[in-house]
Length: 473
Image (cartoon, rainbow, N blue to C red; front, side):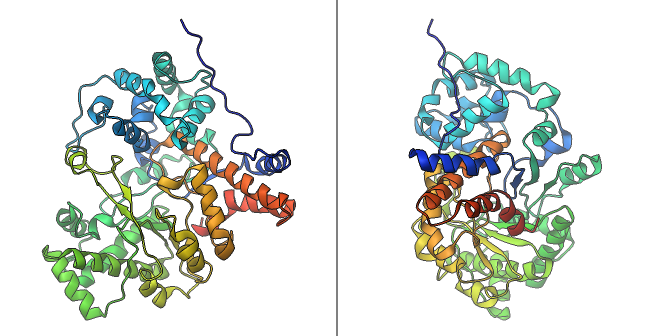
């Protein structure tokens, strides 16, 4: 029988190799390591915190919700049914959760060097106290240890929320969500701050497979005639107000591109009428999404909600997988994205108004220095979201800082957000971001581009103050 291999988290992970810079990074990290977590954008399930029920087992908690994980496994020929991933119709294969975990564990070597490996090993080590590596030999010990721990009161969602020092956690819901779980959280008296964010994509994207049904439901919920342009806009205002009443401070828009438009009222009305009838072309659907982004900016000036734009993703690229399993199953792909021209209609109208706050993200890293940093470094309304999704790895975070610093600075960025469905990975993701930022700042200090006291203040700003300020928290 082979000796289990130790699972260790080196205290200097992600810090510079050069001793002087590493020492600076250690000191900076000491200023931010224990700061509360501000998680202003993510996709965790509010029902977890409303019901505060025990998570079922290791597979249900750590494998099934995490498309970062099963995406890699699928790329190596492992079918999602074998992992117990629910199908589009809500059914799932009869695979035993333990068997799914064994399959994951026996392939954990596939994640070597990836951010998923860093996040998961942090969870295993820090949350569950495991001290051997996950592999085929330790799979059952891991499964039993984690599943048993999850039945203890200290591993209920609210207890973990407190243990993780989360000061605020934002979830993301569509206008069709009645926010009952958020209402239950508030009524429970639990002091944990869990808020929502307004994600209107299902009633904004005419190419969404459920657009027609969503539009009908939108009208039922709001009591507005959403088949008229004015009624449609009133319905958005009404739902935005309901979200704000449940703590929302932001909206979120996951469009294929960053296109915005500012059509004359009559043209916008005619375009909407065509979209609502279901007869729009791809170009008209794109123009409609673009117009709605500008309308959302106008509403933000009225209700104060911060806009987040997450463009540049070809969603559900794998048609076979989408047909069987639906959205968000690891088949979304980055695309080249234009910002300078795409955002100009919105910025022409609102970009000079400091009351508006638009946070822009990208999956196209080539735009950091060429477009996004210069835009954010000029327009008062525009800010840069952190390295996102495919780029929220240490290397991606470093590239983000390198390419945006010269023309955007640090204070036109908004700190870090984890953007995750994997609740237990939140502390790990924030720890990685804090370590990378401290390493980057240590480089600037060691090159005499910044004094260490300035870097220490900036490290706290990036980890804590900027996200609170950016998201109006």
